[in-house]
Image (cartoon, rainbow over the protein chains, first blue to last red):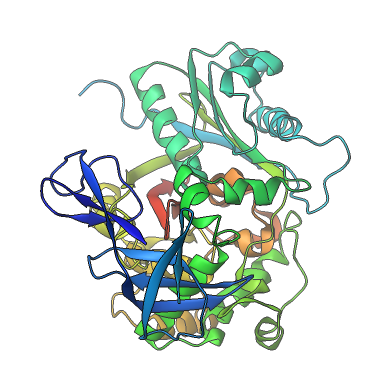
Length: 85
Length: 379
């Protein structure tokens, strides 16, 4: 999945912000993150989780596996929707 | 300093009967109009006296406060819309009292209400804000329940809480609801029944989630007359940029200032209202306000919701009385003002003089970003 990295100070965010929380810059580059750690998971219509990405942001994702909290998961994206497996 | 800091007082507070199944022909604007007529009657005021109007609603769109002013026949010189959900009631109060202190208005009616039918609730939660529509709706999260399920899991883990700990709060609020003819769920509830209610998203079960209702609330804030006064009001929104654990609200940062301004502390409160979208968040706000100085949330729930109960969410709260969209942000204010005016009927808290009310809400991504609180004093 893609996260947004401030081109001036390197701070990563997800979802997108208008200005960098740290330095105030409005210039972002998209960076792919392929793995993260599942911090929480819950079942509803689908499995939903909170995944800590290595660049810092905690992303809410659909989970398409049986991964339990604490496990490393791979990250992907379906359109704008983050996916973890 | 200009203006009179204690000029504004709340002279009337009403709630239209909340309902799960509104009568045919009910719309958001008919609910808001009903609340307007009732609150003017309650205040003994005439429509021509009103020179300020504030409105909070999700479903009033595309209309705004000015449309309502026109259709109600009001000529305001102070006009405001606020759609900040669970924080909107205190938000409107904050601005209305400053308008009165500054002399911009003398008689302000604040209205808040929502009507849901068919798919309108799902449409609202899937399009709550741009971020939800873009990165949450496709999962699909289907609204905030899954997010607060994860927060509740984390609070349980951090504080060693079990479902029955939250049940104490839910059961206590239902006991209050039994004394409130306006609550949608009034039947007595046991802890066993709470534990057995159908699952929504572990650990949240149906009785941890607010029943969505149609309804409206209203206040009159006035420069004259006998009413409830504001001792202190503080707000802090977006306190952590949605990058914290979500279990501490902006209230924690301003609680010291709030109590300082009020010249009182949690122990002085006769009535308490915290925004109860979920039991975990009601508990978080009580902790943020300073009601749990030793940090033992489980002990606090046992002590203050069973052994020596604190008067918290005396309408039954949104968990039992219902959540009428944005009106959820005014529901607690209306209840507390009703208590402080001594008009709470069977559920009247004896000699209620001081009260605190919180607002919380606007789930931008992971949890609510808005937080405010007000300390109110009886006339």
